[in-house]
Image 1 (cartoon, one colour):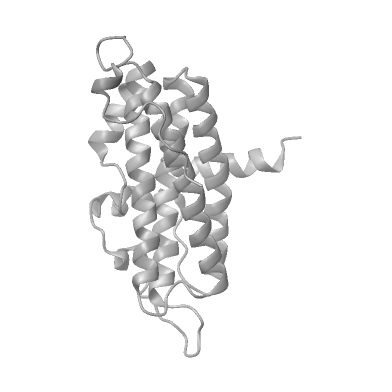
Image 2: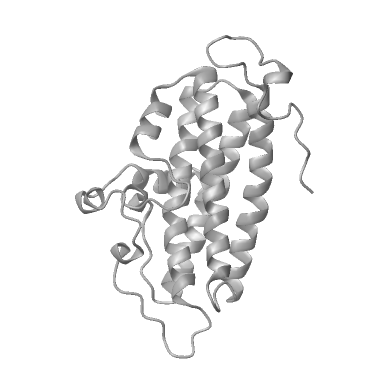
Length: 224
């Protein structure tokens, strides 16, 4: 019998590459109003419109990260990178379900994982970037993946910053806990990815980059 985690992962993955024509028509549109019905906040609710938009947008953001992570299974042979990509996959699949459940409990529209095709939240990769990553192999893929996922994670951190900058938002307990968990997890993963980037051979040479010429320190300080 297939483990429940595997069933959940497969059910999510079945939606990741499905892009409805309407979603494709909205490609590049950042507006949350295209995600579903107009957001209506009930009188006396402890959450805000910005909270709803954050959860809806982060579903699309996470869904693209899962697509990127699963490319690593066929395009990379780097054990450390594969360990990280699998961690991102395994953590963000259940987080999508948490966000969808929160939205449904509050009678708000809950996007499915195909929503990443029609939304470009902060840090998300465009079609050309994804195509280049899909075609790359080995160290070339590893570099594109790490650069792209660092950008992606930085975008998620900005989404959290924007949430807390909106008056009264990010105060509902579940939203607050989730947003802070995103910051902790993705800040730590950015540190890991910077270290992995420093260990890659210099582009097109097959040789390790000279320390003096490296843009990133060989051993970046560990964030505590």
